[in-house]
Each structure stands twice: as structure tokens, then as C-alpha cells.
Amino acid sequence: MMYLLFTADSFMQSALDEIGKAARYGILDSQRNILLIESEETRIEKFEDMKFVYGAFPIHCKSDLDYEDYLGSLYRGIASLNLERNKRLKLECFDINCKIGKSAKDIEVAVGKMLESEGYNINIIAPEVLAYVVLLNGKSYFGSMKLGGRYGFVNPFRIYKSKNVSRSEFKIIESFSEFGIKTPGLVVDIGAAPGGWSAFLAGKGAAVVAVDSADLDYESIGRLGLCCNVSQDKSKVDLDNLKGGCILHLKMRSEDAIDLLPREAADMLVDDMNVGGIDSAETVIKISGALKRGAVLIMTLKCMHRNVMAYISEVEEGINKEFEVKRWKVLPHNRQEITLFAIKR
Ligand SMILES: C[S@@+](CC[C@H](N)C(=O)[O-])C[C@H]1O[C@@H](n2cnc3c(N)ncnc32)[C@H](O)[C@@H]1O
Image (tube, rainbow, N blue to C red; front, top):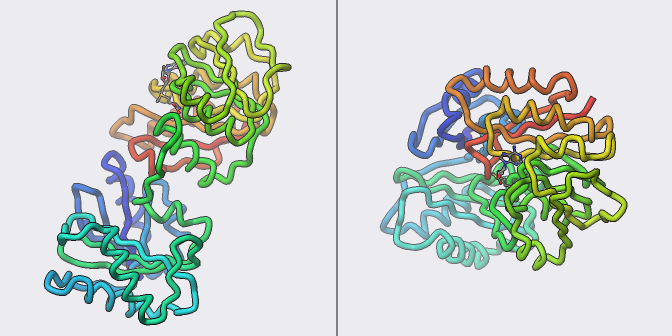
């Protein structure tokens, strides 16, 4: 079985170490960190466990890209996948560097029409199967997969359309789906500005205490129909008036909020502060008294060292006293950072 795998610059070597254990690989595009790997393993789950790989496409066949008759050749490639015609099918084209004169979207429409005229059940709204072609280095790579929860993991090209507060929110959206997190009641969000994570969490019905000395984007948050109050008050935080779907912005550094938060009250702590992982871990420990036992911690690790594994271990050690680290992973929309998922002891 062949797979196209995607990693990020900073994690290329670590990804190769992981993959090397599992399979033979070739680097198809070192600039974009795209690898073609061959493996005995036919189940994609194997790659989902890889921490430094943020996307994986199973590839069932490949051919040289026919520039003269590219629509015809792409149609034939998809047809050769022998997909069931009665299944609702969506086609996606990812033109990485071939630029054949039509946009990927136009190719999808044109080839989709050809498939439809041959009796395939094209359905882009509620597909059961995704068929795709990846155009890379003069070749076309074809594959398909059943759609389900894993689609987000598998498709590194999927770009969420943001109408919300900040692009950062993609990181928390992906954390929720990757780590299977349920909607919390009360969340503390440290390093919250401009408020993408807070808005996402409040939009899910959580009550959010957002801590950051910078302003949130109150206007965008309001446009989403969410309430947001600001407090610079250094007295205890009153949670009685903080309802689900609302944000209380403590306009101060996290270190200054530690003693203000009620003890053992929150179901979740999210930390996207742009400070080094070790400092971040220290703050997380200090603020952890505000969390219930079993509360979820999501933390992004920034400022990578060359020795990624040693850096992660150091952060894990830093929070180990209060948290059990469950998983960590490089997520598709957060390729320069590691996202860590832990549970309060
Ligand atoms: C990457 S941004 C967070 C983006 C945010 N998650 C969102 O969705 O909009 C990092 C934030 O961390 C904040 N920050 C850095 N050090 C902090 C500290 N000690 N306490 C609180 N916030 C801090 C910065 O002010 C900045 O707004």
C-alpha cells in the first residue's frame, strides 16, 4: 500500500524516524515535506498514531500526468479505482505544483461531470466516499477513502473558511476532533487574545474565563452573538453571573489571575500563550488549582528546539505532577507547534 504523507518543516526528521520504523519511504517534495511511503500496513490508523504526520492519503495508483489530455487521464485514473457507482461520491483535486492551466476546482467540476455521465452518483453535499487525485512533480496520484470522523485528519488541504475571530480557532477545532473532547461547562483560556478559542468554546455553550492582558476582538465576538464582559478587577472572579455561551475577559497576565480563580471549578484549561513550553508549563501548574479532577488540558508548545523529543519530555515533566499526558500531535492547522492533551490528576 502507498501513502502520501505530510509533515512540517520543524518535524521532518522526527517524522522520518517514525516512518522509518514502519515502512520504506521516498521524499517526493522536500520543500513541502511530502513523502511517499510504501507499507505492508493497509490500515490508515497506523499513521494516525504518528505524532509528526499531520496528513495521510492512501494512494491506490499513480501515472504520469498527461498534459495533452489531462481531463481524460484524470477521469481514467479515478475510474480505475473501481468505486461503487451507487455510493455518494465527492471528487477532490489537489494540485500541489503541476499548474496545468485549470484550477483544481475546475478540474473537480469537469471530471465530476464525466464521472456523472458514466453513472457515478456524484454528491458533494453528503458524500460517503471521497476520491482524489494529487498532482505532484508531473505525476498524478489517485486514491479514495470512506468518509467519516477521520476525514479531517487525512486531508491536510482542507482549509476551514473562517468567518470568526481568528485563524487560531482552527487549532482548537482540530484538538476537539483529534482528541475526542466533549463540550466543557467552564473553561479557563490563558493567552486568549484576540479570542478565537474563547469564541469557539463559548459558541459550543461553555462558560469561558479568558485571560490575556491584550484586548479580545470584542466586535467579532459580539457579531457571533456571544456575550463578553471585561474585567481588570483583581478581586475574586464571580462565576455566578457567567453563563454558558458567555466570556469573561480577565485583562491581565495569567500569572496575575492564579489567585483570583475559584478552586476546583473548571472542566478545562486551554493554553495558547506565545511563550516557551517550559514557562508555559510552569504557569499551567500554578493555575491548575482552578481545575476539577479529570479536567482536560489543551496546550500548544511553541519555540521548538532542535531536539524536539527532549523538549517535549521537559514540558511533560513540568506538568507531570498535576497532569497525566494522554497524547500529543502536530495538527494540520498548527504545523509549527505541538498540541498536547492531558488530564488533571
Ligand atoms: C497565539 S496568541 C493566542 C491566540 C488565541 N488562542 C486565539 O484563538 O485568538 C498568544 C497570546 O498569548 C498572550 N500571552 C503571552 N504571554 C502571556 C501571559 N503570561 N499571560 C497571558 N497571556 C499571555 C499574548 O498576549 C497573545 O495574545
